[in-house]
Amino acid sequence: MKRVQDYLGLMRPHQWVKNAFVFVPLIFSKNLLVLDLFYRSLLTFVAFCFAASAVYVINDIADKEFDRMHPVKRDRPIAAGTVGIGEGWSLSVLLLALSLVLLLILGSPLTVSLVIAGYVAINILYSFGLKRIVLIDLFVIATGFILRILAGGYAIDVKVSSWLVMTTLFLSIFLGVAKRRSEFVLMPKGLDETTRKVLSDYDLGLIDQILSISAASVIIAYALYTVSERTVHAFHTEALIFTTIFVTYGVFRYLFLVHKTGLGENPTKALLTDKPMILNTVLYVVSVIAILYKSELISFVKGYVTLS
Image (cartoon, rainbow, N blue to C red; front, side, top):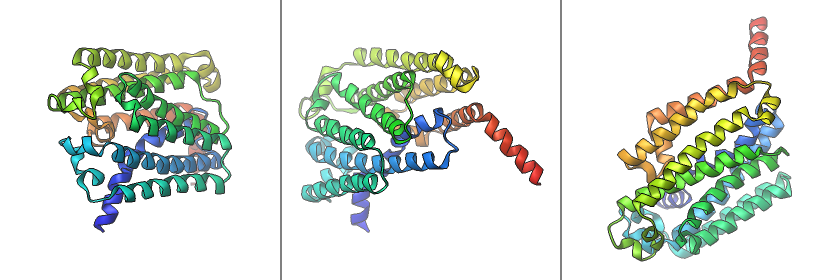
């Protein structure tokens, strides 16, 4: 049982929520209720989860020395020594194989496999070098989120809006620099001069400037997406602009968590444990679905009432 817990610790299933970006093209193309396309998106999500977990294992192997000096990460299985490096590599290869086999058996488009392969390759480079290059580390994180959205689009043969790509870019940079800020504040002075050298290239002034710019860019890019000609034409409504209030609150709430609670180092934990953030996310999703699928929901309710 302890071994299973260690393997799950390496795989970090709580981080799989990030792969929900795969569903963005499905929702915003108004195909959420199309079972075949939902099925394809779900399988792509699962394949991405396996691939992402493989990357997490490789990252833990690459970062084992640094993690042992970190007040939180030192308890990770590789750093703590409860799982050997050889076991870690074996688990990573198994997870990558499962991701590939899943895509092949279920006949996913080749483009989906290529996107996931690109995600894995970029993140391996990130683990063994790119994470130590100032600013590049943030853009690699952003690329990972964009690839999730592209995979979701290719899975259902839908072109992803450029505005959604830009919003995702700024959002992922925002989350990445918030994580760097928390690491910078948490890390004892001088420790970042070893394996986490990139932190020494940042300072709070620079980090806070990037944080402010990326936060504003997320809100502006999303707002422009909701009122763009293509969006209004596709959804036959301008009501999507009202969901910007939830995006704005979410960004501001996250800034509060970063500056006041120290949750910025773990975006997933902040998203899944902070009650106002959870409520805001639920309200955002519900409002988007209500606006985009209004006619379908009305038809469903009418049918239910008639049958009753």
